Length: 235
Image (cartoon, rainbow, N blue to C red; front, side, top):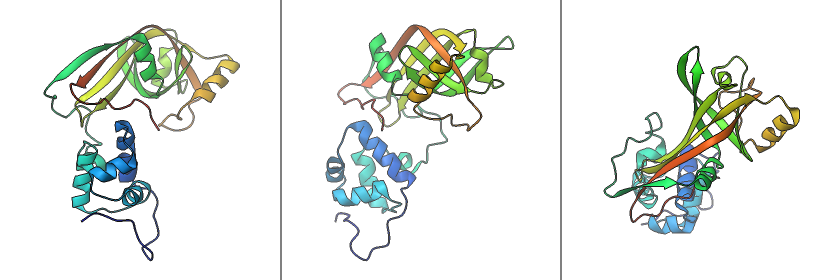
């Protein structure tokens, strides 16, 4: 028996749930249409749309089928692993390690997201997670003048960006090395604002741009032989 669209007289559609957001993102990562996932999960496309776009409460049977259709787990879909560090899955049977070219590294960096910047603070190594953006040759992030990540200015720093896919036990990592500086030019700061993908997750008050001029970009990718790699495109 398949899950069907909510019919006339059903309760009003509620705001989108975390389950819906995770299911949509996973489907897009796999490059699958809603119709393809619905067929795999023995459900109608309309019901899958309802799950993705509202606060649906599917049965455990549908959740198991949906997780299987998306090559993931129910725990991943409902956020049960969100407090765990990435990479808790087991190694795949036939992993392959590939070296990424500079162009491939830049392609992955350009999807934007969260990276970790390593620098020296008070004569000791320090690493800070930052929301970064890419504009031409620059990689930049916003911070507050008194915050830890601001100490990167004037130093040669390293920044790592990665994506881990626990469901497939594969992913990629890109390392950028370069000198950082405070963006004091108003035109350059405005250009970075226009390219910014997200605001800092830690909130307002972080308006100082720190830019990194890469002098070296390297990367690696672990993929599983015989599987299609998820697209790096984000929604």
